[in-house]
Image (cartoon, rainbow, N blue to C red; front, side, top):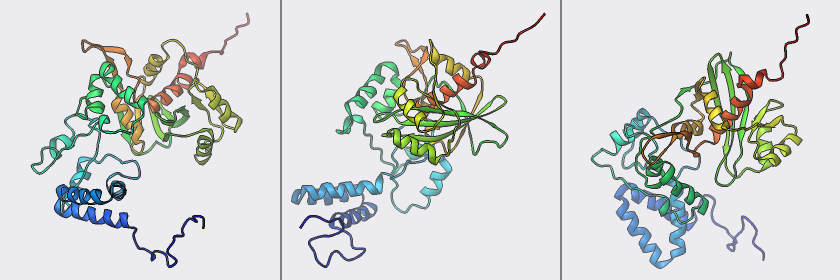
Length: 340
């Protein structure tokens, strides 16, 4: 009899609500971890591994469900952490990239706690990373040693040379004028990013709408419809002409940004003319701004070139600024004719 989803060789089937073997053992392991610590958990897993390596692997994967969040984690404030800490009976596990300054409460309050244990893992501990991503991380040794310290070695570093400063806001003011959408394309390594920009005087207001890997044209089009983008302008990376044309044919007012010599620097200069305000729900944009820094030469001097890293949303913002907030482009084509 062919396999039918939801059926098994047991005619009676597993009782409703009953756990399969690996799930049940994983729950027991979590309980043992909470009560007796990591050593006891290691002993349990090792015993099972000797008898049945495949079952041990299944339990390990199940355990990850209790440790790794299924949705993107939002960084906790010091106050949020304190409230969680005082309500925790046994142990708390915190996973993070140390991509913030050493004055952060994680370093000053948590790691200095007398009962805290620190475990450092790096990309070298992950046998499943794609070669391209490994090469990008290794490249940081030369272009940004501070970044390599954080993402290559798992050590806290100071993001010296940060290019922008931003304000975190709850929402966009009602009287702010919508400018346009910006889009940067990605796929396997980099995410596709869509941002919305509003303007009021010298303030720019920014919201993250899409930040996701693995999106093909149909995925992007469906998401744009869900967001009710309509016929508003979308300025996108001109390097992806095929994607832009496919989205245009599906009814979206998407246009390629016109890049020229030093367009990255020009876009940065345009952004610097405004106060940048980012909605606090836009966690990836906030993260990018904190990591977007000037390149450093071998003597430790800043170069006038940004590190090409952690910039997908920032590129999308830059596209809008280059096309909609560039006074030269706005005035281009406007002529004044005087008849004497």
